Length: 424
Image (cartoon, rainbow, N blue to C red):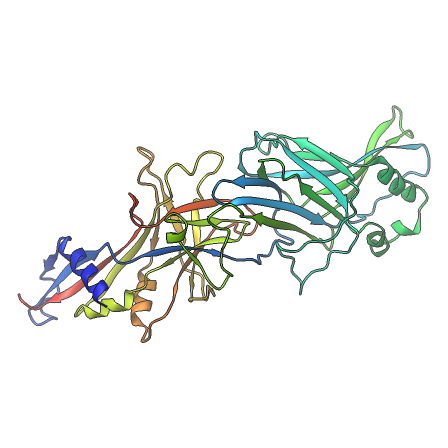
């Protein structure tokens, strides 16, 4: 209690107090004093969520990156493909090749000038959903034989797709089944018994990047149709996004040799004091930023105290963002209890204010007036705080290094309030 009183007295004495005659009749001749607190205690920490839904979303994320502070993040694709009504001419056709084709969705994070290597495998077990969902920590077995491999520099803003050429023995076998009208290609059920799906795993020996692809990935078998003159190259298409799509991104992390190696379970959080006064957010990896303002209820000690407005300003660590690692433009906010259970979604996002001139005063802004008032109104002490994620938290790799208060950073909460001045 003594600590918060000292903090408040210093903060108020350092601010201009403006007395107003507005409302003096209502307050029996008294005036309203307008003041601001900008040094209330504020703590930042990192939270780790180990289960995020990545199945049947708007993106398939594939790639890997070793981040200096966050460790390695690796995203792999698992998916089924469908028959989609494929048929072949009865004769005069010749198998040519087969491939997995992924269509860029324009998203990338980290340096796409670095090479990535994707390896394709055939699944040997059926992808099973958990009560209708697929999660980032799901994983399914695949045959050890590499069906295909591609080393490339991603160009998501120039090319429309990327193709991994596959083993011709595998392609010819399926091609012949279509040519012979085999039972295995007569229904989707029979087809999935034969071909349970694919896994595309990036080589973690690379530094790399993470790349977004549309869900409309497909397996293709190319053939030459000699029934036309001149002969025409055609293909059978087995798409992911068929009538009952099954696909998800599996995301793994390795934080060994980082300050985040001993992250607590999702019901706890790691204070920034243990991570060089930095708290972290990383989409895909399940890292969220948590901010607590522990002494809000103590503001009731100020007589006739009324919060007019409260704003939060969160400063990124300078030099940690750039063209290849841009800051999220907004952060989604959730009020949460002391065990990180998010009980609501905040009605506004924290948005980025950019200092284009000097780059020193770039910060996130969030109006938290309602949150502050609600915490002050509670009768008992609690561990409620605010958790920050990104809009694409499950299927991107966007990151933020958030600076704790001090060390040259002005991360803070500013509380504008009024009191009744009875000395007029």
